[in-house]
Amino acid sequence: MVILYEVHENLYVNMTNRCPCACTFCLRQTRDEMNHSGSLWLEREPGVEEIKAEFGRFSMEQYQEVVFCGFGEPTERLEDLLEVAAYVKEQFGKPVRINTNGLSDLIWQKNTAPMYEGLVDTISISLNTPNKERYYELTRSRFGIGSFDAMLTFAGNVSKYVPNVVLSTVDTTLTKEEEAQCAEICARLGVTYRIRPWED
Image 1: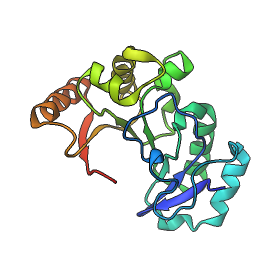
Image 2: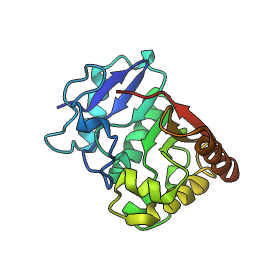
Image 3: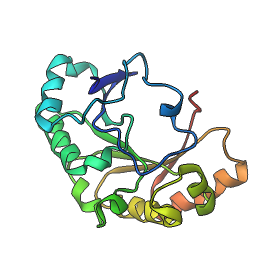
Image 4: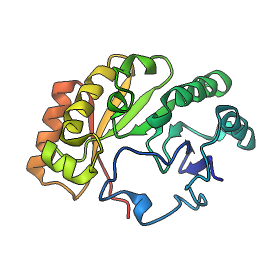
């Protein structure tokens, strides 16, 4: 069962397969691994101590970041994630990033932004589109059409507690006009906009 895996110069943490979205473009629909990781479909969710123990199998000095991103939405296990993040920072002094859909407030039915303070260095959120109807069409979030606004609220709130908040879209999937609209949204929220390359 693959809990930790390498991509480029980072070490990724795969904690859950649960996700509130069923995105039309999700990579797990067409593959079961990343970067020859082995299957990222978990037989069960590993415990916090089990995850911590896995780090002993890797030479941590070679990695630039520890990234919480697997075949599920990492904030489905938010408290466990933050406990592991604290361990990573205390034991290895590595920057921590979370790749997320930004829906942790909806998952947990509260303002989760303050929980990340001091434990996470970067939060990368999939913006996907500047349009809430199109966002819902793409993500098929179980929380419905309100997911887009909730994600933006979270992004704005968490930027008060996390140094680097990035909203991203994928190159070639939007028009230049839509990309400009996304840039305006990010400027209004005070976060970074990133157009990331398409991965097939």
